[in-house]
Length: 328
Image (cartoon, rainbow, N blue to C red; front, side, top):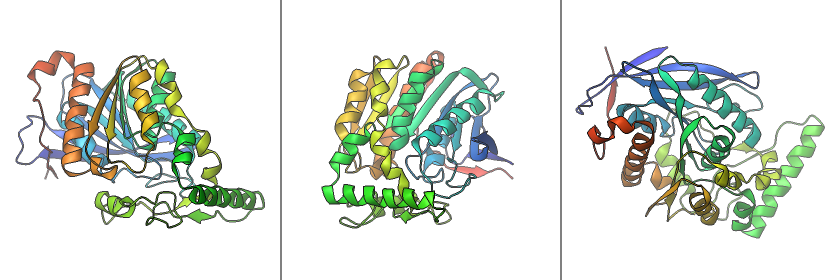
């Protein structure tokens, strides 16, 4: 299914189309949107996916629209077990599965006729901000990386939690894993909750931040299968930063209470072509309002500089947020 979109009250001088598509990963269908501005030649493409249990309609469509308005194709996808993608049990988080979904999404983007296969950029946020660092270190063809409020070190993240919360999460994961060996239904735990509540994320702005980025008809669910807690502390994608051959932009939120900051800063410091931008916003403040506008403007400029250098001088310094509508 293809939807034609055009900017309303904003003159970008190009038409943007969004196509619904699926690609295969792990024997399952992953749902995706593909954005393509009108162009006479193959375009660089930004591949985007959310962090942890996030789904694409939680503001990733807005990022993709902004990138498409700036002259890039964009592919946004949901991980297997989440959102509009296939897979059971639902809400099963796995770093390895998500990395495989990313690899399949990159291959899908490279196979599109509208895309220059050697000009692929990866855009990740929170957990996927770590994914993209590891993936780009593995894949020398990746041209650029944007890591927004990145999860870089699972062990540091575990130690940043109150001891009681960390132990409860590990115990829930153990119970779920043992139960799965005996054929029991998955044990679900809340993804987000109030401070002091039993949840994976319990910062003061967790529930309000998620509410701000989640539309009423979203497929997002505030629960995950508990067993992921047994392995996520071993996931340390920030260690791949010194192996990155491409430029990487790290966008940090100084008011972030969800992600351990030091490992993320280490990515920018140890990546050979690392760049760092810091913003006075919270974790979820990076997705909406002034935080979004500031971060996405820097990201567009970064991507233009490295993927569209011949057009950089003609590019606007900062793009207003596009308001898109379906063409009749």
